[in-house]
Length: 255
Image (cartoon, rainbow, N blue to C red):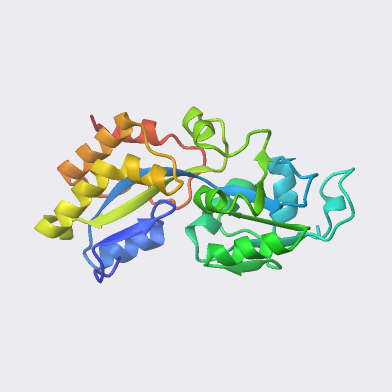
C-alpha cells in the first residue's frame, strides 16, 4: 500500500511513522477510515475452570519480555499447578502490536517463547487442544469458536459488544480501519466500493463478529471520506491504547 501497489489496505491498528514515511517517499497520500471496533479476546481451554478473570497486571506478568511464568500456579496464588502454554499472533500482526502496547506498555515488547501464527485458526486449535493453554486474538474468532474455548474477563469485564460500546472493556478494545489511497479514491470503481463499504459497515461488521461503530461516528467517517481528508488522527503512532476515536474525529472537525 505504501508503495502504490494496492489501493486499499485493511488495518487492525493505526498507521506507524515508518509506514507513513514510506508512503510519503512514494508520494502516496492516504485517507484513514475507521470502520468498526474489535475486542481483543484472551482465551483459555474449555477445561480451564480457574482463569475466568485475569487482571492486566497478571497478563503483563505472563507476557512481558523475559517472563519466567511457565505454570498457572505462578500467575496467582490458588491457581493449580498446570503447565502454561502460550499462543499469539505473529509479530508482524497489528493485533500483536496492539496487545503488547496495551498489556506490556510498549509495542512489540513480549516474551518470545510462545507459539505464534498469522492464522488465527492455528491459535484456536492450539488452545482447544491444551488444558493449560492461553492465547489471544480478535473477538470474531472467539465467537466463531466459543464452543471450543472460554473467553477470559479482563479486570472483571468480559469481552462483548455491549462492553465495547460502553467503553468498559479496557484496554483491549480497539478500532479497525481501512486506508484508502487518495489518488485511487478518484477512480469511480474505488470510490463506489468505499462508499458502499461505509454505508454498510455497521450491518456487515456485526455479521462477522466485530462491533459496529455508532451511527454518529459513521457519519463523521463518511464526511472524512467525502472531504478526502489525508493523514491519520492518531499521529502516526501505530498502536494507540484507550484513546477516544470519537474525540479525535470530532476534534479534527468532522461533522
